[in-house]
Length: 235
Image 1 (cartoon, helix red, strand yellow):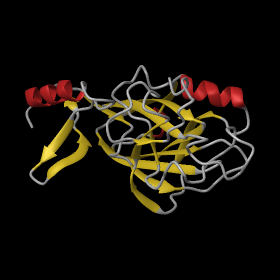
Image 2 (image 1 turned 90 degrees about the vertical axis):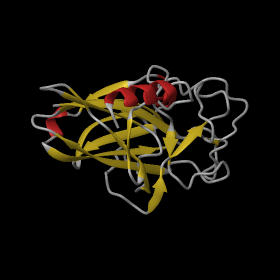
Image 3 (image 1 turned 180 degrees about the vertical axis):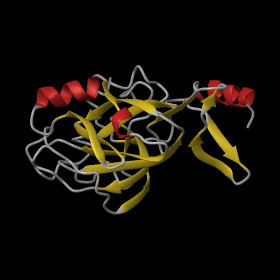
């Protein structure tokens, strides 16, 4: 795909929900792999949350820390929304948890409108939600001396890993104030120390908190969960 065609594709994507990155199309169809934007001596590769990330079950934690261990492969991540109005850029086709009384929350992705709130592929409004874990993973090929950053917002807790090394966490499954802040503001993390030339695997493990009801059997309709993020690599 020529660079000019990519720009036209990106402008069209920005008009629809939370889709906004540039994507390469191969002879076999849309590969959902972001293409780097390169000048003579510099390349930038942007990424964002969406169904192009693989989703897995994870190991539930009561200690406040998650691992990047992958559980059962569940398929592509799915777009999720609390209801049709939350977040404000809820995309067409997203899973609607349908918590209709909720009119606030999930504001953290507002400044990265190209990124979608996502969750594990087997989520349904009726499924059990408290302390459930979703793990998302994707591999990127980078050039020499790579640097990178990520911005992330989550309901309720997430840890970010680069090549199996933890680089930061945000939110809480213990403290409501921290969890509320995590879903309504973006937290920036530096990925650079764990990056290397060549293939780099980014893993995001997220866990839902137990805040929405007094039962361990709350559904996602009662206790929504999701994570939204975007970032860039440079080399």
